[in-house]
Image (cartoon, rainbow, N blue to C red; front, side, top):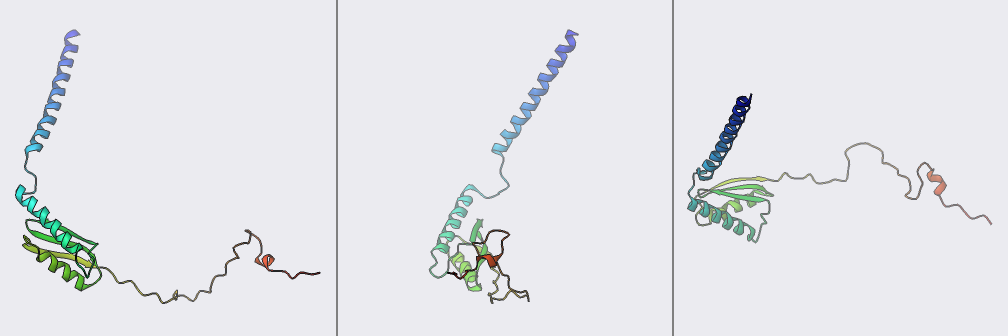
Length: 153
């Protein structure tokens, strides 16, 4: 019986050691493994700089405000995304991005905001106007009770 308990204890310790060792190896391997991003460290720094410069140039544009435009850069390729009001704004954002040093290509994924219909003041239905109770009426009371009554002397 004593040998059985020692065997179970030894097996448990070995299993725990294997689990800890494999967890430690995978975290060690992941620390030094190359990420899925195949850019060099210098290219990553350059891309961040390009992104920052394009965003700054867009924000300094005197005619249009590009608050809803996002910029991402990968290997010198700048991708613009977001929303603007007109085709002119979309073209101008692309021109600004192309003018920045280090940009090799601009992918313009900017979309136009949908036009909102102009209000006409009509609801579009033949519904009768609603009549609401006066604000000082108590719930359940008749609005005729709140009308001014002539003073009888």
